Amino acid sequence: MKSESLVKVWDLPLRFFHWLLVAGFSVAYLTEDELLPLHVWAGYLVLMLLIFRLIWGFIGNENSRFSNFLCSPATSFNYLKDLVQLKSKRYLGHNPAGTAMIVLLLVSLLATVISGFAVYGADQGVGPLAVLAGSKFEELLEEMHEFFANFTLFLVIVHILGVIVESFFHRENLAKAMVHGTKRSDQD
Ligand code: HEM
Image (cartoon, rainbow, N blue to C red):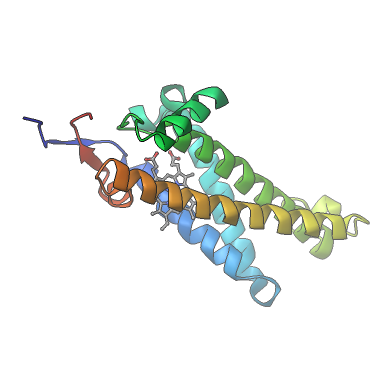
């Protein structure tokens, strides 16, 4: 008989990071020029969270550390192939497909934030990239910012679909696990 005991998988700082990131990205995406101060504050929040996640990847608990879940694109691709053939292995921490999505999300979020501060600096002459004040590339920077914001939204949609598919496949609620931090310990 399989044990149904629970194990701690996601530590508290990682869960705070995740749900604050959801809030920060949502606020930033839904506000633009009309609510510029709020949009910029949400951008600062996302930037702080990304810096935190980078540090936490080295000092966080086992499942938060990059050394424990980063893998090659080939491993992620093979995992997706197994998933399609309904034989993917269950992971307590991030699975290889989740890992690929995490890397894409973090890089795309960083590109969105940096291009956002570049537009802010070019247009208003303030913020961390104020040196870009009056830049002739402002329009290009705006297009880049919009592109990365929409690409991040696309990744978020795929991420949520991935969480739903994996939850059904392994008969566990992964979204809830990101709230309370625990998963059942048995492997299947
Ligand atoms: C209601 C919406 C969402 C749900 C239910 C959800 C759920 C989850 C779950 C279950 C995981 C763990 C995946 C695993 O088992 O490997 C995860 C990880 C992650 N999610 Fe989400 N997510 C949501 C929205 C978002 C959004 C909007 C973003 C970014 C803007 C995001 C970024 C991330 C990142 C970066 C991780 C990796 C956590 C880490 O740093 O280790 N998620 N999410």
